Length: 146
Image (cartoon, rainbow, N blue to C red; front, top):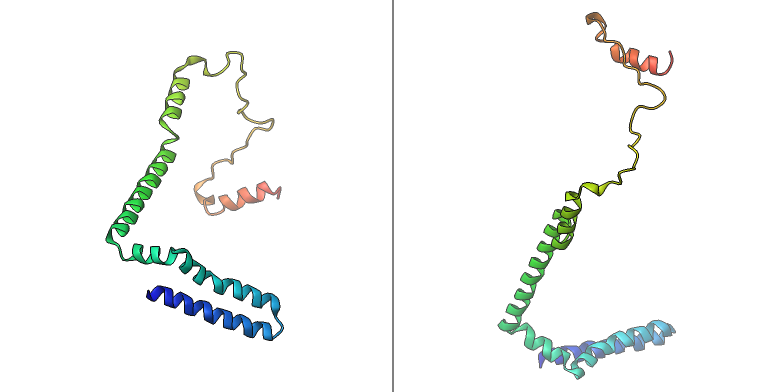
């Protein structure tokens, strides 16, 4: 009963604001305010407000929301674990079978070219004990051709 009264008062106040806005020649804004102000009274007339009031004060409804929350947490936890393990059980079994087969790579496939490039890498010569302070500077200068 109180919720219906509050919604009616909010709608009446909103329609009053819409009239004032229309008086100021802002018709588009006035129509928008009128539309928003009719929503609470529409909810009262359809019975949504009564259903929400009954639900808000029902311990059974809150217990139901709690059960839904626990179900959601469990679902999201299993999804996270599944992603970390690498997919569903069916996908893991298929991957294990593919790994067990010896012909996973074509027999005529060439070896990957991961060897050294055309230019061999040069290593700097080991520095003597007296040159330890300047070895990194020398390496930088040699790198730049100085």
